[in-house]
Length: 126
Ligand SMILES: [Zn+2]
Image (tube, rainbow, N blue to C red; front, top):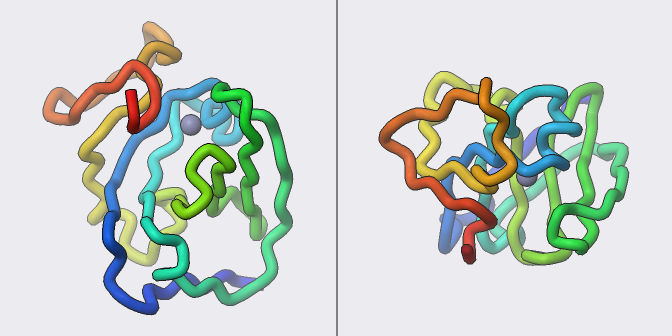
């Protein structure tokens, strides 16, 4: 089944970010997760039934990742009203332009970051 994601209304907050935390590295199998974060998650409607799996993130709080044949979305207990989508799951992934790099303290020496993004050693609140 193919997922469909639609905005029901304009969100209060949306940003494009690259997350370099260890959990995103494991989930994507590479240096970071390129994601689009939306607040509040009620601004989004999801059509389809993903398979969810739950892990404990770097914060010590659970993270749920949704798959529909490939990694697509993420929900965080530490930020329960935010939902994230992997950039490559969007219909127009070429329009993805990250504004922030998160958890740069977990980035590997071979991980290249764009010069014009805000760098945060931890999460959005760091
Ligand atoms: Zn992450």
